[in-house]
Amino acid sequence: IDRGYSVGDEVVYLQSDPVYGGATKKLTWRVTKVDLDADRVEINDGFIVLDSMGNPLVWDGATYEPRLQAIPAEVQVGKRWTTRFRFARGAERSESYYNYVVVARERVKLPFGEIEAFRIDGDGFNSFGARLTIRHWLVPGVNYSLRTDTIRYDGRSLRAQYAERREMVSFRQMRWRQACAWCVPARVSAFGFRDDRLDVDVEVDVVAQEETARVEGLVPRDPEVLAVHLA
Image (tube, rainbow, N blue to C red):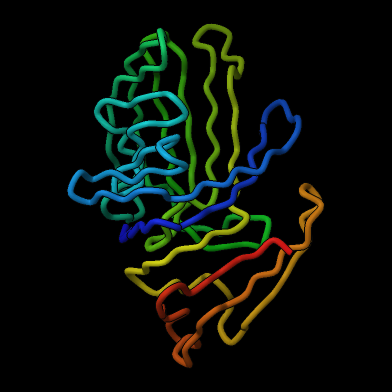
């Protein structure tokens, strides 16, 4: 999956409820500590703790033991795996599992346009009988999922108990392990859009782009390749 986290990396998401609607929130996650020897990446001073592949260990007061293996080492359509973990938050405890599959390589709609990405679907249950579903889209080399849809259903009524969608608005990444061919169209240095949900204008600037971008996509150059700014 070729992720490489650095202190200062940042991603901004729009968070919404795809089932019941309601207000849209902006989430800003910033990497505040990286300890590769311990295989830990802290976001927002430990609010979220990931391993170096992006799998969660801690999330908003909840712990996963062992880590929730949502991100595979290699992404290939048809790949399947199962992850089992113990979830704990305060007095709440449960044992859960997901069966994951890399379903397709497809285009996903985001606030700044359509991006080609791998889609991974997960489906499972916890020890209370609730059905757990998750779908996320990712691109190898990019530290964050482009979009994630999560829904938890009551095991008896099948009514959605919790639903969340996170859509990437922007990201900053200091280290690149491979070229990011999709970041912008070849031979385009900047573009913009308006996001009415946040009532802001968004401008995308390519900080560095080599001539070979026409063939290979963006070629990384330190300290960062792509910066997306809220104007």
